[in-house]
Length: 395
Image (cartoon, rainbow, N blue to C red):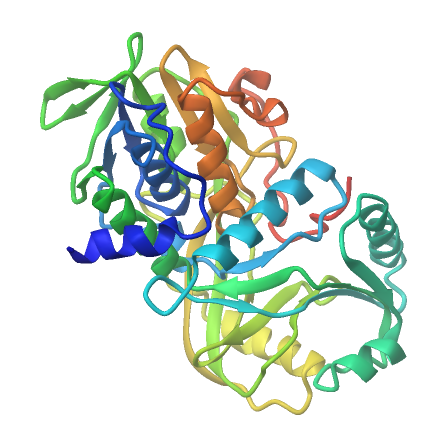
């Protein structure tokens, strides 16, 4: 067996059986990030003739720069279902031969005096519990008892989610792309493409290639790719920043809402970030290096929450996330034979296993996700970019 066939055998464990619903159909997937690679794999294993395109390499865009934090702590039932489905798939497919998924509690907290976020945490946890999400509410003392590494004397309230963990986004994406190849998909990286509509088709080096369906999942580049085909979508890419520092942290993953940062354990210590720029970024020319003051400022904030740690900067970088007017993604059919998956507001990796499977299902003739229907917007809406990892558990 080839390496990609070995990966396919590993990934097949715990997944649904083949049904060959895609036999006889051809699909182009534009964007070899986490969502695109997942969709390509799901389509190929159903018998579709899939070609996965990327102007760079697999996971060379936002997926390779993502934090990899995963949890189901959402008050909205749809968000919680998709996130929970993704966590289960991460668990089932991870392993030494595929990609890591490390179980780790997720804590989100608000500080004394931050009344708006304190109320949001309490309300959010109550709604999660109503929907059957395993989420606990804790005050500072209870939080300190469970997680001694956290400073909690300024914590008014926290939520704790147990169905959570973290992964390596680049390895996840590479494994799914390899498994797609092992299942018969064609991977064409270093291949810039253009989209043409009515009917949907791909242009490569001036040559048009027709497919039964085209899925554009090109992250921050999706808006431009579709604009070249005369199609507008209500999405804006925006810049975020993160760093890795040498430290000793086993758990928990933490989002300090008042301090405006997240942190998780990492093989080299910790991975922390946010650094959101609340304005539209140019996906072609944005600065991929972190700002000069970003690392010093963030390490100071992380040190406040984890006072026993010694955080020595290893590296810092910037990546792209994508926003929509209502903070929900655009996933589904734009027009005949043309589909899109973008606008994940910093949660693309977290939802990639479920979203990739759901959009593949729609391309195969199944139901889409009505709430994420991309045609709910005209495409010319004016809206502001808002912070990526804000209270995503609010309704």
